[in-house]
Image (cartoon, helix red, strand yellow):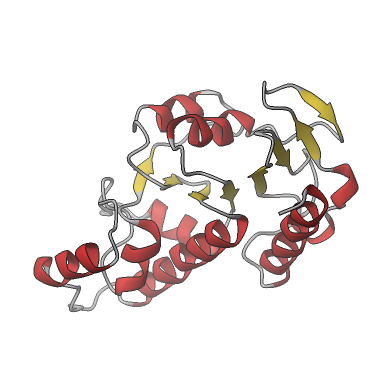
Length: 213
């Protein structure tokens, strides 16, 4: 994909997430790998609903800012995914309401934050790791992701929001939407003895769709 098209695609998908209230105000950030090994990143303090393709932060393959506005303060978080997952072509971070609400619950599974209620979260996300609370912009968030050694494509920052890496911007956005939808479903089912997928059913999904579990 040409850089011009990638810039437009990134901004269009970000606007779609904003328009459907999956992030709000100037929250959230998004990035994508360019063909030359650089990065396009949403600038700091910008709204997903009003990103300008021409003003995206542009990094070269050596990690130097070469064009555009100053980048999001969550750059350490994005870089950690790119450095530990060779397949990562894009990273999306939202402040989506239901995922944040679920992260505040006292009894969630930190190693498998999104419960296996449907096959689709497994297919698109694998296991989601719940990370502890960090002050926004803290480089320790990137260190925590690096500590996972590339084994997770998605993490949940407690009391903050989800972060997902995907092969493309579309894939990352689809996956983070699935995370939010499943978090909403999990909240709807709280207090009910819900039938989650069995270990055997989970294994079938993992095998059929070659999920990194």
